[in-house]
Length: 267
Image (cartoon, rainbow, N blue to C red; front, side, top):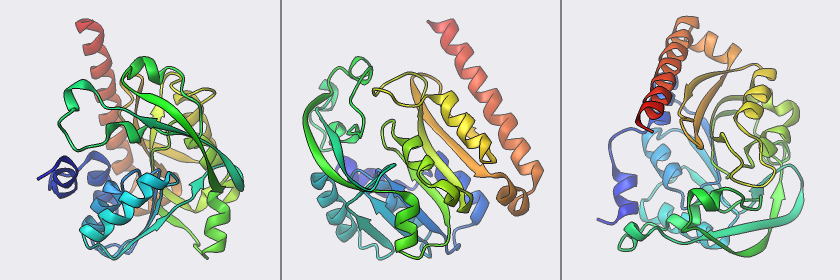
């Protein structure tokens, strides 16, 4: 079994999957957006975990998009809709910086590590963090906004967004405008330092999310980057109650502080 297949078939739940499952249940007919889907691995996992979900998978890089389509076919999932457009803060066309490369200890693996770092933003410190990465190609990709896409597709709301767009997360969310209040849950990658030129950092994401009445219930930004799970306050209080939120917040705060202290002592 190759690396990609093993990841998709792995029955151990990923962190965001556990949280999402605890909130909505496996039979929920939810709408999921996988933004920056790469090869579509997460979309396929969500499709199998939530068989009644309607999943929109966004991947603008043509080579990756072909792999998304192939993986959907290989794993025979029917509730994933692949879309070869880039969600951004404008409608039209823009530059896209294509990544490639593979770390030395992964030369014999079929997993394409290098294709996971392409971005709307030019690389900055990401080349220091991952010196094996290369950005040798710049292409043009079609763009639209989250709000525009949902209006065109008559999508009234999104239950869950999984977003990994290499520093452009805030561009996508800001362009949602008033539609942001129709998104219940968001799992996104967050950076603590500028891995891509001009990107927003952890404090910028937090300020935006709190301004729009989201609550953070998971946080794995322990070093230069990690992930955060945000929920719309009115939604989660009605769905699970305040005690559910408080328990999650206390646990993730303690866990993050412990990780930081441990790294400090070990460094």
